[in-house]
Image (cartoon, rainbow, N blue to C red; front, side):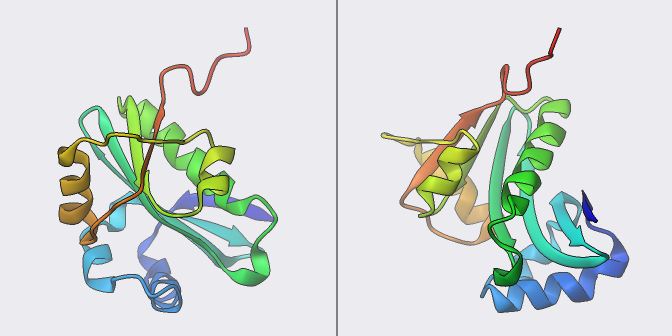
Length: 147
């Protein structure tokens, strides 16, 4: 059974293992624990993602799914769960960085042709990493009602 949920204190060891496996900075993740969601498969955490909301902007990073669990749309499920939560918090635009443009396009992110220095600076402050390739998605009408 697959389950997407917020990170819990009991998940810290699994989070640390995934961050180390993915070569992501553990020291920066500590301050972002409330912003993480995890993906469980049969009770085992197989994926993580983080979205930091700041007013009407959100910053998505560290989307990671274990290699043996990939190609099951778990990364997409994590991202969509975080986008839904961000929209409920009043976020209107989410930014991310990375080089996996096909994955990002599948969840409707588009490349930013002329990103604001403020967005790059936010990534540096929040996640401790410089960015060169940025993407964004508008949450306005992202989750349209069916009626």
